[in-house]
Amino acid sequence: MNLHVMKTFCDLVDTGSFTKAAEANSISQSAVSQQIASLEHEMGTRLVTRDSGFAAPTDAGKALYRGAKEVLRRFEQMLTEIRSAEESLRTALHVGTIYSVGFYLLEPYVRKFLRAHPEVNLDVEYARWNRIVAAVLEGEMDLGIVAFPEKHRSIETIPFATEELVVVCPPDHRLAGREAVEPSELKDEPFVAFEANVPTRRFIDRVLRGYRVSVQVAMEFDNNETLKRAIEVGAGISILPRNNVVREAEAGHLCIIPFEDPTRWQRQIAIIRRRGRSHSQAEMMFLRTIRSRI
Image (cartoon, rainbow, N blue to C red; front, side, top):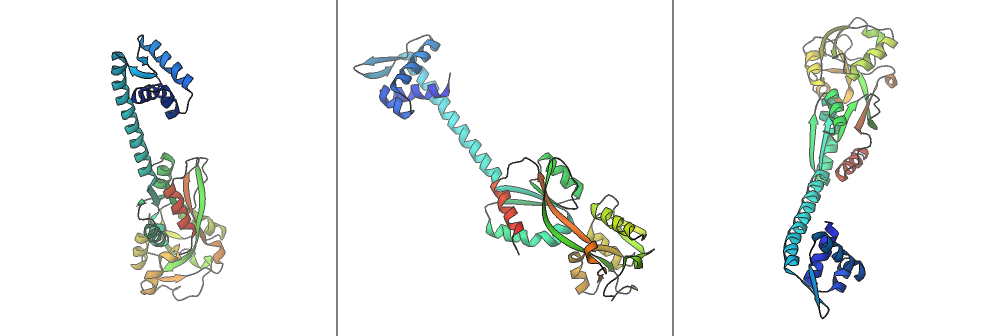
């Protein structure tokens, strides 16, 4: 039984008029008659009688009316629940970010977004780059923010920011206090590095190879905070995003030294999302905030 036919039948019983039932469903009176005739044929019994132009349900028609009313009520309830669930999803946003971007670069944008859109349930997860990529591909995260995103046919990349990479050393290191440094001056230095599979580490290794410079990797870590602590205790020097070290440099715990050619030492930060996935309203608002100036 067609839901539209079911509604037409209930409207006919409610109004007692073929004309009013036709108006309520934006169809012709003839179409109402045809639908009722088809319904009676399907049920194998008379459902409606006409008396002086007034349509009244038979006993079978009354039974059908009660059941049809309940079916239509449940259907409307289901539609309401679906719309409510969809609206809830559209006002929730799950964003994944690598630690170095989340702690230093993204935070002011998050605060601005939450002030402007308190109705959005924003969940920012700090995670490793490979966890973020996998979660975006699976649809678990709406957006991801990573450094040096790799090309993938199922991922769309949106440029976000460029960060300068600088040499970071303890205040008592021989390079401390220099205005700039050449990559060749890092040759054979004890080095505290990102883990080998981290995209920023791969970029740094590639640029150093271009200068024919090798360093002695003493320790490897997966995040900036641990790297900075290792540098502070004299485990080695490192190359890190400048804005990740400003606070420690201002406090005198670490020294920042730019490269002579800083254009070669730029870390690309991008937003990633699953290609082909529709944009929710919350996501579009977040992207507008990201593109604005703080």
